Image (cartoon, rainbow, N blue to C red; front, side, top):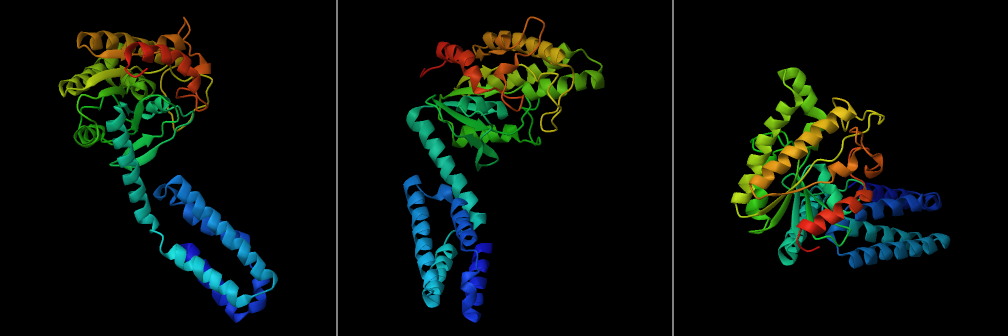
Length: 338
């Protein structure tokens, strides 16, 4: 911890040159100490965290009075107090693991006690949490929880930039298959309701790239993706879960600047035409297997397959919370707890 080194150095400076006590940037030191505490915020209940923070503020007010006298020995004693207090904080390398475990336990307990609906998939799961911007907190095993800021009964789990095409494969870059296995064995309760959210990345990035590589039509590429995705959905259903599928949303506008974080191939209308086909076919296939398909895609595009931008967030890729007005009637019609 750099703050410990700073405090020790300040003590040595003051002991060797007491007059320097007036030139030391004490506000900066206070900021360092509070930052050390902020890094461990998840370790404390909210009330306790704020009490500790107020205590630090109070002790710095005491330090300010000591400097006005000045009382050098008392100021050094107070610095020693800060040193020992920080020294007994958990090291940052352990703090993250402790915080992840705490978030995991809290989310799992909430799911079991309140019978929440699991939402799992790529970054588009964030929409279900009520957050306008992406908000992922690690809970271990490469899985994130999206803090739910609404009263909606969802437990929102982000498994990385996963592809529908790869959802049945082991040892992919996102380890989606392994993460789902872990959740089914350790987190998701038997007979739970699960909403799966995959496909937007396939459609935005890969479909029209693969049409060129494989010399196939976009419908043939989409059919290949759907074969993998449906197999995954059916396999979840066979485990006893109530499986739902959330369809991909409309694609980025053509006028949206290229963002390396959200690459794309094909034009806006081409991607939306592929998404329309994906949506139509997946809906039919889900119906054949008694899986409920949920989608607001048709309400997000014009008749000529352009995206209605008002439903996209500031990153031009994910759903804005403005789209809740479209989603809520669908949720109320098909999901429990609404």
